Length: 571
Image 1 (tube, rainbow, N blue to C red):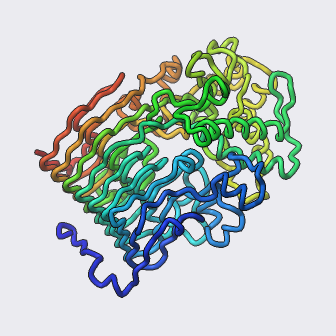
Image 2 (image 1 turned 90 degrees about the vertical axis):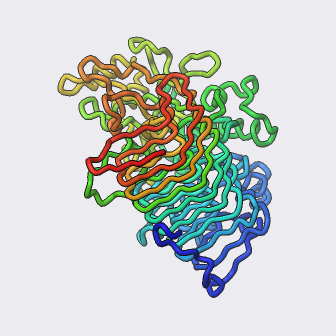
Image 3 (image 1 turned 180 degrees about the vertical axis):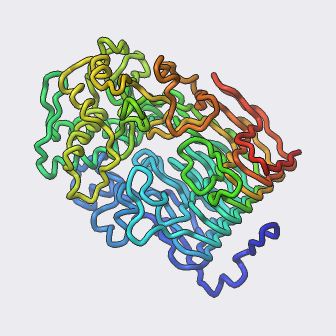
């Protein structure tokens, strides 16, 4: 790459060694690259470690449930860092070193449909030892030795298929060359790199997002929270949850949740149905069914971001900020069918005055009270949408979240290896649930400094800021060239934001991390290119067509948070 001085790694790579990769290199879990060299895929690979059927045979337990499958086995933590892999195999290939070529050699690397259901937090190729910087995300991924960052990496000549999150993902990487690749059936982004320096993406085709997503983010919430309920059952936890005057034990919560998760697995994997069978499993359908079949959160073709996670509002960096990514080139790239249905999740404020969080469980999944049955459009967690009469009725997910939250408030999980400090479910919420009070009464009881309890809006299942869809998001980048970029079909089926957060005393209580001007709901937007807080960026031969929305603005090229020293040239 002459522009930024990146030299091809092919010269001299032979001295580092050649490793040929086959399906059996992935059957037991993530392939870890911790030595420089050339890694060549010799056949198509479908990633599906520790499947239900495999574990039934491995443990000689024909009764083993799908809800207990696809995790990292305890004996595997000798190989896999318990911190990084504590909630599952988050990638097929983890690059933890420098000077690496991954040559797909014309083959496909893909998540299996089973694993894409069971492990919703996943990238096919991760350019780090962990998917997050520091103690971020739904789990404390980074251990005492810190984060390994891949540098001088080429990924080339193949196809990255089905993935529940990303095709390629990385943080703070340098000298990354992605060329002659195709991507298809991704749910968050084909390529997402935060804080990268000297990144080139050339001669690539992004063919589109997955359009048969059968479930919502609530399924992932159920999978993750179950591990905490498992711990409570294993340790004979004395905690119970009183729901509609009935005391529910941890074992009962566990069994109900596992039944729901297994029902989804039975329909989608065992029977091969496209969607959850509403007639056979109406409760699971009500909680998990994805009525549009599209990703239900923000989505991108290519996301190049500053040194930071991309889950909050768009960046607003100032000149001189040290967090810019830099020296990036996109050349000869086609991006098609970037489609999404952004599902706004309304949460309870954790504090009526600050309201800096939505109340969420131990992995950060929002406690959802206003979710509706997709067929009947009736609430499934509370008895009514009228706050003066709305009482808690609960479901398999919310019962597990609240029971675990109750135990976490008393440090039940402190002796375990599991992170529990993300819990923000408040004692007042527990009291409301167990005393069968109305939401109006709870809001009045939690009044502080004249501010009643209330909802907070504009987040997704994990309370990430809803920003819509963009084929390309360039956020906090210095020195970038984009040449010969074609974008076709960018769609957002999401509806306009709810008005339930329009409180008279507080104004429109949107997401506290949102940076969009004017407090406008951004989840219904669609953009061809979003250029944000970036400088010295040039565009040549860019074509954008068919940007559409169901409710929000459709924008071909959106320029936001313009820097004083920003220079943008486009044709």
